[in-house]
Image (tube, rainbow, N blue to C red; front, side):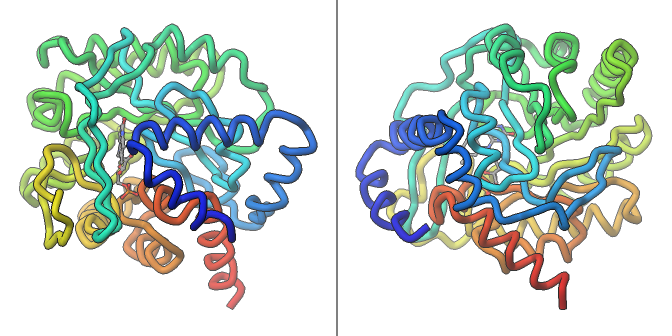
Length: 349
Ligand SMILES: Cc1cc2nc3c(=O)[nH]c(=O)nc-3n(C[C@H](O)[C@H](O)[C@H](O)COP(=O)(O)O)c2cc1C
């Protein structure tokens, strides 16, 4: 959008988290009346219905989604979908409300078109999210994913109980579930990617999912979101377990603890890095998963997609669907339209 550079220069003067909440609030206001919703759709949602993707038994109206963490509490889901996204992943939600780490906990690195965050899953908890989602219209033209995490104080040995409780409480409202075992800001969380924990966690989650799916008479795919900071042997073992337990798909990747070639003076801040510097690693991990599972495991590719070219290359690496987060911070609300228009042109060729 032509005015975004101006809006961005104002937003970038604010603390990043305040700017984020302001952007969400502006969007909700913009989507609050039928005429303004129609205007938003005309401005941003050019996608039409000719970019459908079938993935995990669901039909996505286009391949581009909004990654987890942007709308943690499901406050602006329908408004965000008006920006053109085919799916929105809400969360990470934990069973109980929790404050997350002390602020400031998001740092912009403009010289690197990147962000470092150490949020630690601040959210209002499962009950609040459930109430909010219940108020959403049943009929929707986008896919709703829910990203699930364990509570800060839950020991790893009991983590599966948190995930199962979330599946039971919230599964009914979702089209797919994302099991987040890869955020770097909850102590120990990424250890859940090890074989021992996966063999405890996955059967429990999938069993609870089966109960929810039976109850509502509709399937409920479960995807697992992975970290970028894994060795290839570690990733091999994880993929083996995901396939053995029958998980429906994988989301690759979460933010990284690595600091690849950054120029910004604040590059040493603690937390997970996202945005342009994650691009190569994300693509490499997606290509690896695609090759090593012989395309048996559908992949949502996320990490460093800042524009149409990155999106195209992520799809070429083997992702069936893609997501953005940091790209939206730097490019603004026109990003989905830009990406989807370019992808459509490519298909037409
Ligand atoms: C401020 C911020 C908060 C995030 N919160 C979450 C989260 O709660 N759960 C999650 O799975 N990923 C979270 N992420 C990671 C993103 O979903 C995504 O995997 C990552 O940022 C890479 O994509 P990007 O380079 O397009 O931003 C967060 C990212 C950022 C920048």
